[in-house]
Image (cartoon, one colour):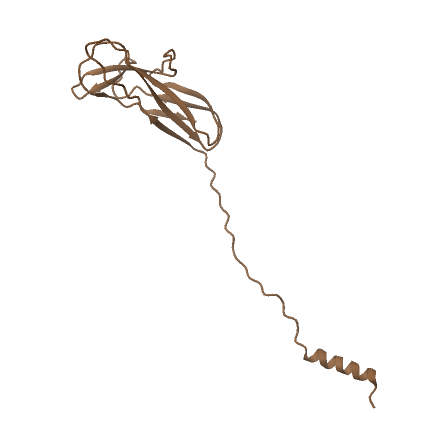
Length: 164
């Protein structure tokens, strides 16, 4: 006769022999891309041109008009400089617009609306700090001195330069 303990041991051995082993967990992998752009730039925009009204050739006129240059940088800067050249028709340090007929119309550029701080040819209209991602508006003011000028449509283009 079989001993009850022997039967249990034999049963346990048989059960162990026919039991499927536990499977290891499945595994999958994937790549996670990592990238960055470190931008260290400034953008310059001349948003509002100096557009003068019609000038009466029979009267002395001191035309004044505002304009705007905007600088936006990706990082804060302790100092930037924005300069204005003399345009395409400057003569002896005087900016001048020209007409299709070849006539000239002088004008000046100022940093302030009171016209006390003029901007020389190749002079700075702004020197100072800018904050990261915050547009820095830089106003400019144009003025045509009083005088009698030939009729015509006049224009000029100033080169705005940002140094940082």
